[in-house]
Length: 129
Image (cartoon, rainbow, N blue to C red):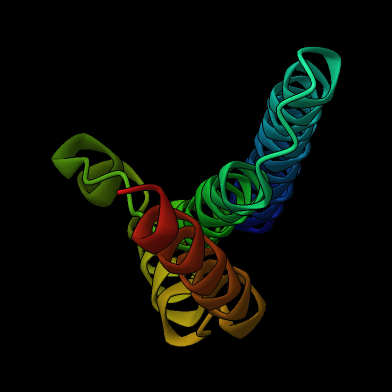
């Protein structure tokens, strides 16, 4: 019985990871469409402002990287439930261990994407203002 509860808990975490990855893909798609729209509008009105385009790309990278960091750490949030801990301490322990292992992993790729976004945004905004 306890083994089934623990397996069910681990299945829930796989679903949470799937949810986080789905959210990340949706945000990347939305931000990419918005960045392409900004660049297309600049092209349509014949305003090829390089710095505006750099700022749009930088903002897109910054949002995508930030959401990547969020989804990495959102998978490491425990749901504190005293009822769960009282009824099934093994499941609560498994949840705490999973959350701890998720928080230990640094999302370096997301940080690098954010850093690239900050550079693009800084170059774009420094020339605009």
